[in-house]
Length: 47
Image 1 (cartoon, rainbow, N blue to C red):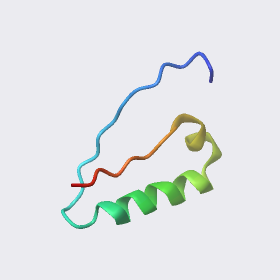
Image 2: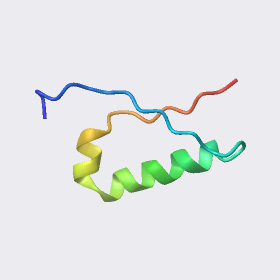
Image 3: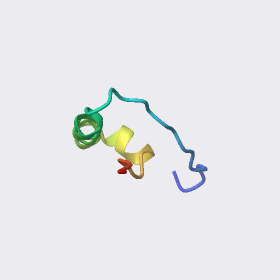
């Protein structure tokens, strides 16, 4: 995996549900090791 170039992805979520989407993604990363190898960080923008 060290040779893989990192990429950015942006998800659009319903207003007010951003934290819930991040929780869901984090939960899926804990359950799926292959996915967790490819996702380095999940950011939640704040105003």
